[in-house]
Length: 355
DNA sequence: AAGCCGTGGGG
DNA sequence: TCCCCAAGGCT
Image 1 (cartoon, rainbow, N blue to C red):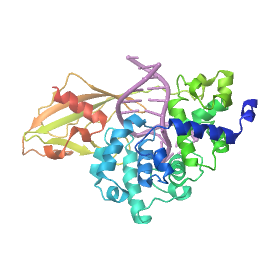
Image 2: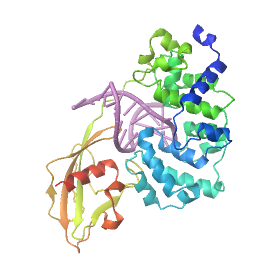
Image 3: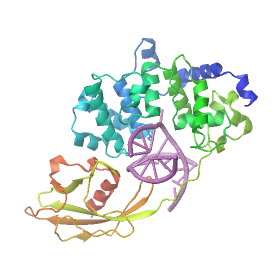
Image 4: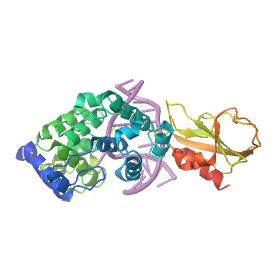
């Protein structure tokens, strides 16, 4: 352990961070601002939960418009629990990690049916909810109920690795970093503290080029003293992404209806609407979902998923009213918007629209 | 328990 | 261009 940490106790560090947070906290739609907090206003559990699910592996910038849409359309957990699955999936389209949307609905229904429409306040019960893991349960307990849970996300891991100059690579270092986070978590204002560390990681202690000159923890930071902050946290090397190939079929009926297919709940893009298509592999099989005169577009749709690149050949056709598809279902224009599609499918649509 | 699961922005 | 990364959870 470095002398630096002995110079500033855990209590002093939490206090320093809270002071910084009171001056620099970002105003975010799901947060209770300083003035309202002084008036005794508490965060809405539904809104905090919704924001936390959306923010999993997703930036604040990407979440904002979705959060606004969801809270306007489904202002409370009862409204969301009563929503149609297809409407929620369509509203989530483009945000990614679609299991989150499926679990969001499941969770809303569990909260309504098993918990009387109120989010449970204890970490253990929160953990039983679909889509709520260790991080999210701790964050909700801390932020909503001021329970001093140890909140550890990617930001906290990075900040802890730097403050303690911890060079053990992730994910191996996770238990150690969690211990470090636990020692710093205060009993006073744990909700503010949790948001403060994450804000610090998101705005000051950033992955690249951290703004150490502005950091309230600089004098306590072992990495700053050692000059190693830019190299932390260490991470296990990543694998290269392979490239897969596929074919999608965009059939438009003469009345303007599009031939679409609901993807199975499990797996990639699970539960989302998409174009009927081939498997995604080295040599996809050409298997049109309906008999037609298919035209192949000159340009492929390119997309990158978490673990592979995809090159999609796009085929289009115009089909008469009376022809039945082997796969999928025609959806008429008022019931379909390309915005309801996951991004890769929307890219194929955009290519077809431009010819 | 390591692999699966999206997307858009930044360097 | 390409790789990295982001308030993770599930199996």
